[in-house]
Image (cartoon, rainbow, N blue to C red; front, side):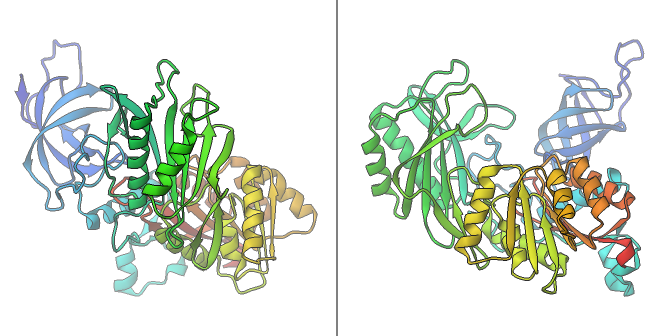
Length: 491
């Protein structure tokens, strides 16, 4: 194997490649950063290489495995100089499983990396100026003076383990036996697991019991390549405050053999089970749920709380997976809305009403809109469940419904958006600019689309005041943020 130092010579000028590195050659590299996939960002002869498993501040030996014009990928062979923030992962299958990407980085460093991810996107994609928080504290400068966006330190967890209230576990077969776990990174190969340290313990118990029952009953696992086999996924939902558990068996077939044995086995092994459901998905798709769900035993829903608001959770309804951090996230959204009791608020991606009901505690009237009709039905039920009457929910496209509300005399003081990873539709952003609410609160799960959308709003007359990153998914690369924007005419 050929090996070159990171500061070595370029490839021979007679070679066809003009890149400063060669494929299948070993190099020493300095790791200068970390990207949104959790890969170390290395430099060799000025060329960027992404290296899974490497951390900022490290010097490593790598082998170049793939190159493009502007960057390439290297395989980590050896750590020459380790980062002081490197830690031993607690999970025994961490290096095989693709569920987490940052367990080898100390939690304190993870929080700093995630804040920097937000900052980098705001500056590079949004072309926005980020004001340093330390200068605000040291020089006594006022964040309201328009000198840049304050990005606060990431709000982390006191105990960043066992935080997920929902598991979606694919099933497969290995040497004739049923296995269940998570996909290896970048593949659909299932890594069998006995426990997952970011899942609630009850999720592990249910998955283990489903595997045990399936093996005893001779149940086959679904195979994507042939579209044969029965068991596709098991989905487990846990109410952190209530202790209630829902189990959903998702099958490639309309019936479950030995249905009674499934129900009895799960009930006996897992205290707290309130609902056992069956979802049918016979489509050749990567989508987990099918269209038909029936209750095998127990209730149609389980319940849990965010703050003092109680929510009914059905098999297919979306509910934030980290209830501890969701309380912080929504509390910050409520703070940024700056409600005094009489405001009209629009929640433009309201889902099952989670943020809407939070805001309704301090607003005069809240209007929630969501394209998924089932979610709107759940939102209305959740409002009734909590006796909240100053909310109105409607199904449809926000960019269509909001102008209709305007024609009916609805003039929002605050608009809250909590879009999916792709960010807000441009037509919705244009609608917000037409309505000109005093404040916009943007809840984001994707820093790059957040930055893109903030640039549109800034161009339309808004100023982004501050951003609060919240670590909803410790040990992964994901970061959520809450942003406060104010219309310049109201400053």
